[in-house]
Image (cartoon, rainbow, N blue to C red; front, top):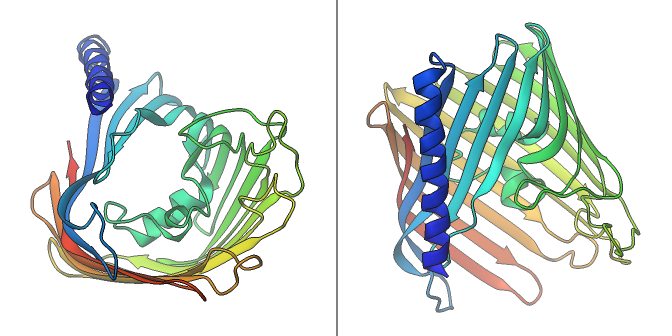
Length: 338
């Protein structure tokens, strides 16, 4: 199994490398090949449990390979492959995290066709930062996915940003078309330089009613965030509420919610300190006592133009009437850009 997965990965890289060489040679620098790698070497301990995942181990959290081709000043093609290899697991298949055509309508408006970034997750990821350590509140808790197949529109002005997406709802790992179109909307008010107030909304079936599966509910998500990002300082808080996010084809309704607060400061060139705290309730109706706390603390160093290294400590605690579990992790996280 591992050998087959590795062969898939190597094959994909050879294909893309071949495309990259030919395009760069004959397209007058209109094509760029780049990659980004997230790894960590960390010690994981779970209280009162024994697991093969514990101890010092290496994780390949993400391996992105990007191809950007510019047809003209207004039209661009973007492809991004995505691979994971977590501890004690086989490598994932090669996913297409991005596969879209982008049309620059004018200086303020952009249209993307294909598997592209969803408005809310992309915006919050850039405000929180440190994606190579962990994703933000929504994707980390499976409240939302980062990209999806569809039509994506955005408009940016000095005072406001608005974005809308009409998508399949199936996500990028197994793109598929459902019985209806899902919608996501986002609006951001740039109150002052660096200070944003943002809100987002999602509604659809997430393809969970495909084929013979019944539809009892619509999946909905509401987001709200207040954040500050200027120079070397980040501050912010985000709230998310999901209604029937995984219960579209299940008779009993359920809901989940959570909030996240984060801060970071660049205390000298190339160095920054960061902290984050999340609280989530995965099942507000069916298991209201279930609660998950997540704490992150670290310092990172931009060692070179290509490599960033972070010393990070994490703690996750899950509580309910029958569960009391704690997980501690400490180690080195790295981001490589080529």
